[in-house]
Every structure is written in structure tokens, then in C-alpha cells.
Length: 205
Image (cartoon, rainbow, N blue to C red):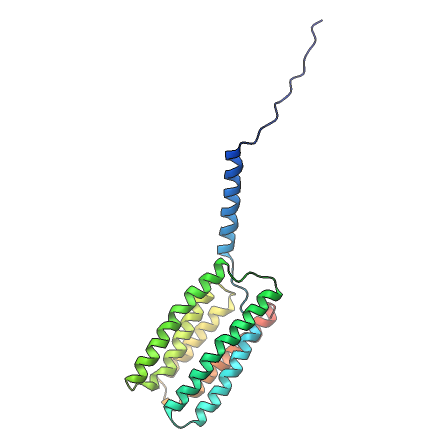
């Protein structure tokens, strides 16, 4: 009787090219998911602190009779607030072990920065042209624009806050100059505090 030799399926040998292609696909998926994510390191409590700085500035600016003096008070607040906000963002990111140099973070910064740069240029131009009364409305509008643009890569409540800033900025542009400091206090103070508390409660600080 002839013996039957069982057929054995040869073991598949993984091709180096196939392995490299699989690794490339995994890297592409990882990068795509990172780019599609949200910048969640926005600190609610940092926004509350910025809002408190703005409220102090609003009180000081209202008490100041000279428009140039009021502008200096607001500029001092504007110079202090970014450091407070950045410190709070870094603190939150470290506490949650979230990387700050990510696709969403870069997009947030790149979208947020241009309106702020334009606002700085227009501040100098308007003040030199004797149109200082238009500066508060312009600040609120462009800050709101920056928040809406950057907020597209953050949590949903951030762009909503930006639209609220734009609304108050529009009111400020067409309101009497005496209302300007109060409206900026409402915007930079009130909105930051209200939305900051909401972000802190819903998104971990």
C-alpha cells in the first residue's frame, strides 16, 4: 500500500515590503486621528483669572478720565492676561498628561494669532489717527474672531464664546464712547468668567 504524505501548507513569510506598508498605514491613521482631534487643554480656570484681570482693568479705566490713560490700563491688562492664560494651559495639560505640541494645538494657535496681530496694528493706527473711541469695539470684534477661528479646533463652547464677543464688539462700535469701558468689562471680564466656569466644570479645569 502506498503511504500518503499529508500535505502541509507552507508557512506564510511576511514580506518586508508588506510590513513597511502596514507601518506606514498605521502612522497615517495615527496622524489623521491626531489632526482631527480637539485642542482640549484650554483652561477654564485660566479664563476665569483673565476675566478677573479684565474686570479690575474696566473699573480702573472707568475711573480714568483721559482716553489715553484708559487705553494704557487696558494695554497693561492685555499684556498680563496671555501669561496667565498660557500658565494655566500648561498646568492643565501637564496634569492631564496631554501633549501641547499636537496637530489641533498648532491649528488653534495658527488660527488664533492672525486676528490678534491685526488688532495690534489697528490699535496703533486708530490711536495715531485720533480714532481711539473705535478701539474697544475693534478689540472685542477681532478677539471674538480669533476665538471663533481657533475654537474650531477646540471644545464646542469656545467658538460660541467668540460669537458673543463679536456681538458685544458690534454694540460697542455703535454705542456712545462712555459705554466702551463697561462693554469691554462685560466682554473680557464677564464672558471669560462665565464661559471659563463652564469649561472648568465640563472639561476638567
